[in-house]
Length: 238
Image (cartoon, rainbow, N blue to C red):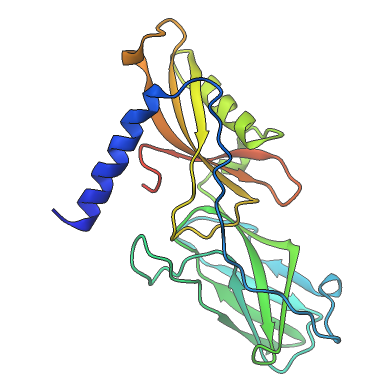
């Protein structure tokens, strides 16, 4: 049996166990993400640097053009914090590589490749061969499936989960919800992403046999925004 097959079987067993959860068994599963420290040079102020994208939202299959204005540097690069390199091995942490920016008519231009995981990613700039790192909570790239942003938003991640179940076909109700820790290879910012395992069932049938389980990922629209459904799968990372 391969490593991947063993992993799938283990996750399936965990999913079956969700029917034993009780309502209100919410856990604060702490998911830690590693981010490079940010050091600001005396000549650079993020508030004066304008970062624009050709599209603020992309999917998993299309790249995005980035343009940076007001950046004083000899060299410049950009990366997505917490993102995985598409060229890395599946289910292993391979940091998103620095992407070179080129200066053209006073602006720095480059290409951002989509990471393999959906989510919202903060951009970070590295100038003058790493002497200075710059980032801002406003520099965000959203990697969503179509119509994700049209979904209803909620004041909290758990409220988004409840809203998702309430709109499922068959008049379903949420039986239990528990925050699920992000995997070791998943370095998406936990301030912007929450993963839950849930159990739900038809309102007309409260028996254990009627319960179904899903893994639900919610995403926040910026560091002070509202939450909405990002993905719902039968395994944590389908």
